[in-house]
Amino acid sequence: MRVPEQPPARQAKVELEPTDRSGAELFRVLRSDGSADPATDPKVGSKDLGSLYRLMLLNRALDERMTTLQRQGRIGFYIGSVGEEASILGSAFVMRPNDWIFPAYREHGATLMRGMPLPRFLANLFGNELDPIRGRQMPCHEAWEPGHVASSSSPLATQLPHAVGVGWAARLKGRDDVALAYFGDGATSTHDFHTGLNFAGVFKAQTIFLCRNNQWAISVPLSAQTASETLAIKARAYGLPGVRVDGNDLLAVIAVTRQAHERARSGQGATLIEAVTYRVKGHSTSDDPRAYRKDDEVEPWLRRDPLVLLRQHLVHLGVLTGAEDETLRAQAEEEIRTAAAQVEKAGPPALESLFEDVFAKIPWHLEEQRAEALSASRPTRLE
Ligand SMILES: Cc1ncc(C[n+]2csc(CCOP(=O)(O)OP(=O)(O)O)c2C)c(N)n1
Ligand SMILES: [Mg+2]
Image (cartoon, rainbow, N blue to C red):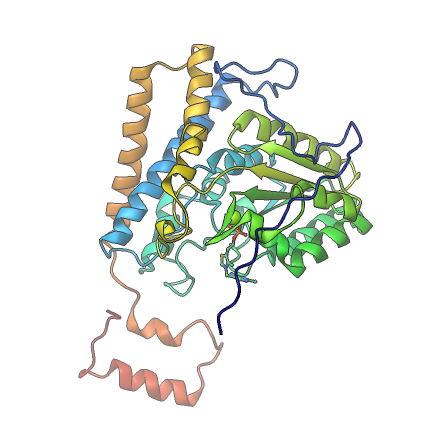
């Protein structure tokens, strides 16, 4: 049976109170000449701005290199964040070491910022013997407990109730820890989005909901995802503030996340931030967006690339020259290339490891299978 084509949903217009920031207007700091609006500038020092720019370059180089390795058949899968780096790095930058991060699956930049060593991250992609979980987790699904980064979440929005639990526990214990949960526009259509925001509203959980509205949920455009005027406006129904920010403007993301962080840590409760951005590449290396969208939709977003906007700002401040920029780019690419080449050299997990890590005492039938697998007639490595 052919399903009749639906007209795209109409975004309903709602009258907002003057102080509300969940309407269509975007909160911005960076201006077109590269300067920061003094009225909204979060005043991040140039040393921190430099570190953020270097990490953004590293994140971009990582995405590019891993996509190439996947195309060459050297890793199985990759999912990146090209174009969305400012919303990820800007918000993670505000978090303190005692705070917690609950990623979806594109927030590798945040995980690296929280101190996960690059080789350890890469080992998950190769799933080789350097990977502590020996290739059993999906590639690109890192976790970094020492940096308070929970395991990446493939099932959409299941991380929201987890982040609310941590944010609520902090409140009950009288601590000022904050939990930041990342998710996409598509995840706002799930029951866990509702459960998470509702619970956070009622119990004033110390949680920040960071929605990366990158306009697409694989092949589903935002217009088919919701009839709501914005995503931020959904916060109102849960009794939370909603803020709509330019997700490609690093400084704007930092400014609004700081306010949400201050609100959460001082016991005033959660905030929903809608970071308006764009998924420049396919959903993952398993997707070809040319099947469902036109290139001319992408083009205007390339001019608002978060890397370009931040570079313009650094040049405007006089802390970055074109030559220095070239050097930093080359360094980022080299760092990724060297680390990946090193990690790739490791062998696959030992065949024996198939039988480990599930039972404290291996049951008799697995003992038998292990003995058979390890017998001389069999290969001793997983290929
Ligand atoms: C509960 C659930 N439903 C469906 C899927 C399949 N799925 C994986 S990613 C994705 C799209 C998610 O889009 P969005 O939330 O906008 O995040 P983005 O990938 O754009 O960052 C879907 C539908 C899933 N992983 N989990
Ligand atoms: Mg999306």
